[in-house]
Structure formats: C-alpha cells, structure tokens
Image (cartoon, rainbow, N blue to C red; front, side, top):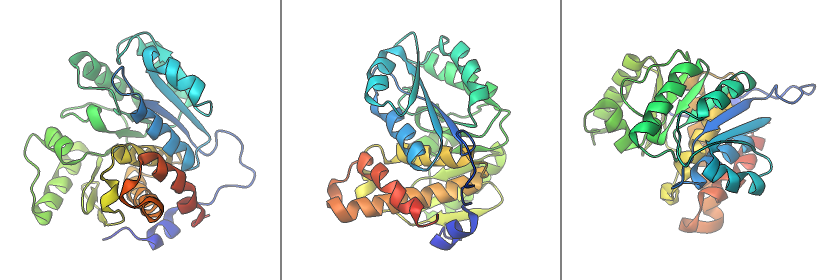
Length: 277
C-alpha cells in the first residue's frame, strides 16, 4: 500500500544500450506567463533529469525570450503574447506528433482566456498527460487514456467542488471516488501523498518538511511527465514520481537542511535514478 524502493526496483525498466535519441521519452511542457517564468523551467529540467531525451517548452513569447538563451538544453517554442492564448494552437499541432507526453498548467494563471485555451489543448492532446496547477479544473474533456492529475489540497477542492477532508480515510475515499469518476489517476499531494486510479491505491511517505519550498510540486509534475513519456501507466508514473521527488528532496535536505530550493531537488534526481539503473 506504500510506495517503496522495492516498487521502483520492480517497475523501472533499464535503458536499452542500443537506443537512440527520442526512444527514451519526449516531453512537451505547456506553461509559463508574464507573471511566472520559473515554474515551467522547473518542470522541464526535472523531466530531463529523470532521463528523457527531449523536452519541448511551449511558452508565451514574453517568457520564451528569457528562457531560451539561458537554458540551451530545452527546446523552447514561443507564441505571441504574455499569457497562454489561441496563438499557441498552430505550434501545439506541430509539436504534438514530435512528443510522447504533455505536462500542462504550471505558471499559466487562472485567467478565463488562459483556462479556455488550456482546456482546448487538453481536449485535443490524445496522449499521456499530466494536468497540474492552474490547469486543474472540473469537467475537463480529453481523449487521453493515461491522465494524471497532481493537485495539492486547494486544487483538489477545485476539482471536486467540495472541501478536502482532514481525516485520512475520508481523503482516501474521496480520491478513489474522484479518480473513478474521471477515469484518471489522481496524486493528491500531502502527508502522505494519496495515489489512486479508482481501482488501485498507494500512499507515499517519502518526503520531508523542507519540501514546502515553492517549486517542489513543479518538479513532481516534470518527473511524472517524464515517466509517462516512457510508456509507464499514469498510476505507475504517479507512484514512482512521488517516491523519486521525495527521495531527491531528502538528499537535498541532508545538504541544506530547511534551506532547500526546488532547483536543489532537481540536482539530486540523478542520484536517485542511478540507484535503479
């Protein structure tokens, strides 16, 4: 019932020695706005550190001009504007066949026009998908068979339309019920993390109080997106991402105590991944 090291030992596949660029996952990150530059960067770098081959970041031109020159590992595509808008649609259609999984929501803001466009991208995507942060809304439509929501408590309340119970058993029941209704996997972040696809249930206790630092939810989303791009199910991806993110956070805390940054956590992801390679 709890995600453990043994779970990852069993499920994480070894990379083929003869693999070539693109065979180990290609992730599309849709995020960022005039107000929030850093969030989609954290998502993208986390996906890379989890071992994917390519990460495309689709962001407003306002932020893309900043991100591209400073992060040459990322393939940054910018569209006109300061926030997500309909200008992204032609680029999205070009990137969809180039990528295997999408992470959407981080740093978008909740403006009506932004949310309308995000909902349209989610509906059109049709591949494995992480819905996080501002993109988490009720009544989203998607043809994707592998869908993972990664809410914190407030975002989960927005998804369900009701307050999130404090009692663990009631939380678990609501997560299971909502996952079944949505035909999706939900990773409700907390202590513990609750993960369910409406059928299976796992809890994750691998984290620490230092991970209240802003951005550690973005790193989780990036790790999950990377695993989805490697053909793991949404449930497997959620379980392993929660453990990897928490383990990296624990390594960062050993070095920095409660002064950790999300970027410190990203730098520890390779040390976690090497344990299973």
